[in-house]
Image 1 (cartoon, one colour):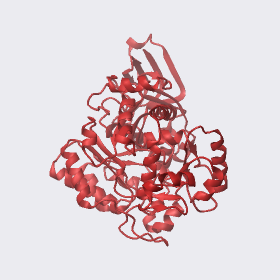
Image 2 (spheres, helix red, strand yellow):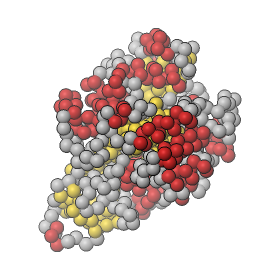
Image 3 (cartoon, one colour):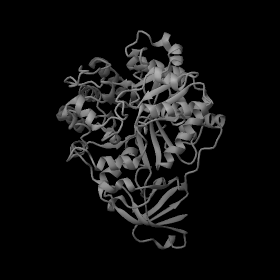
Image 4 (cartoon, rainbow, N blue to C red):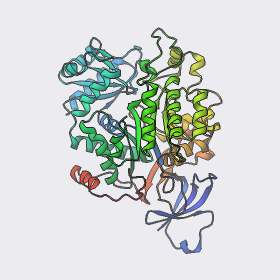
Length: 528
């Protein structure tokens, strides 16, 4: 048993701040302002200016992809292609993998104003295949050695550009499938375990992983389910299969389906394939790409909804957002469900019609506040391609909240850094005046609402008697900070099931077998 004394941010229905929290055996026994006599002899940990809040939840992450890229080379901080080339060359000299994987290249954050080319990658690494993924996760650049290996799989596909080495749309997905298929199971498992440790270091105790990115037989979906079941130190994983085939979820006894990739209704702004109602205003023009017809999306949503599954769909542009909202509305009118918790991921450029549908039908939005004032895709660039009026309507958090729509926070990692402090800072300092959230709303978005999305709110997401003691230690009280100062907030510790988080350390075989053959699952309803 342990007593914590200090500011306890409960994120309960009233956002109350308590003085004491008592934990025993991984559960919270008491939260309140006066310590009951029966706990007077328990050891006390005084927070001394630090605070406790619920553990953070990342409600949209590509865990297997993030784990792979987290083990590779991150070039997001580079500000020139020359710097990226130097980083690739240095990394190639110490990387023992057969294929060099790098992530984060952006034409908008480097002084050259363009993606680096196949020829530049050849100079940086002439003797090993290189897979350089663009910051948005929807395109890549390959060097000649990798191009030769994948040419037969990608030539003739939309988005195939052998001259520059850039692959986007279907060609990118084919190359990505090839890369994921080349990973060994021990390598993937080890990377996922290291990714869990990385996330825990940011105060994240639960991740909603969208999985299914080209592994044979959707192996990554099964592996993530097993690793989630066997994860040590109380770390939680909830898996969303990225498939339009309902059986991919049902045969694995997963209660949810959706994400990006196969469940993406459009692309992204950086590749000019986010689906728009009106054309892009720059030289590229066009209206982006809707990957599916309305009929196809509606048919999928109806089938998944009737199967009792929770659905999430990727939609960036306004045309895709409307398509998602209308399809989910049609599914719920076909087979009404009171507590479905369907969602639209990203929801970057919503419409009034779509927002009204979400509000009326209880459709939640797992948003990425890291997209606001994002160095890899700056506001100035978005204004150039969308026009200033349309760019000003991006990520309208205040509008969503005022409509009564539940917002949760996700990183879309590896696209952005899984950093809950950054999520809060951006949410409370929106680049569009009037669209910011309050600090209390932002903390709720990053904690309780994340647990609510996957029906975990009875066990996690707030600090109250009877709940699992999943708690994050913060350096100071965000409720007492000015929104513009939130960036100085630090995560100083993560406590899961009452114990400080410890690194994942079980071997590959025990982790997989324990996940397959009966690791304890505390909440059987969630079923990972």
